[in-house]
Image (tube, rainbow, N blue to C red; front, top):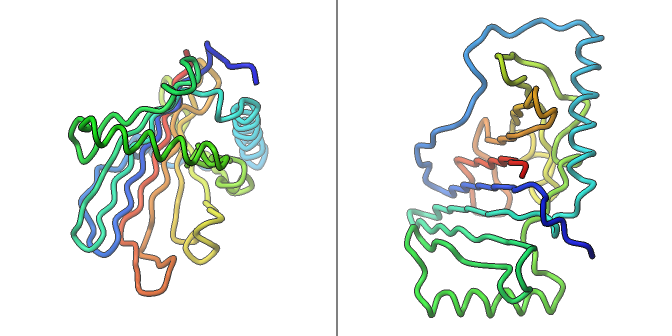
Length: 215
């Protein structure tokens, strides 16, 4: 597969809190009055979003450089990590663990991480991030919210296969569309209420943020 050495950079962040909610600073569109849109405007806005997502999905995830930052609070036990992938370097160096619980990983942690990645790679599971925006974003639900000098802001309904319909109904998405570059540069999904994805557990706070930075 040809690697896109000049391709965009994708920064991904996820916070998943189970049992105990932590305060989070959520991104939101600027505080402007919601603009009532005509059907023509709604169709135009949805068309822009569809085209931007289609353009993004033309490039396989394996051809993007990205960092995945995740944090989990399970019954008061908080853990976090930041790992990065760079397709422009030799395969053995493409994955790197940058942070483990906010600290630079030890040599032992790095070796354990790389061993797990190599094992997953041999099983065809090297990428633990599945990103299909056209399936996560309910395109017919995309609505224009507001704008400023540089961006348009919108909202959308969410569906995530692994969570199911009931949990997805508790999620709401926001997107920021860069006017000059004509692309979506931020997507954020957060929950509007607690939900359960397995027996005996309840997720109080969920946040997924995607920043797209062209190079």
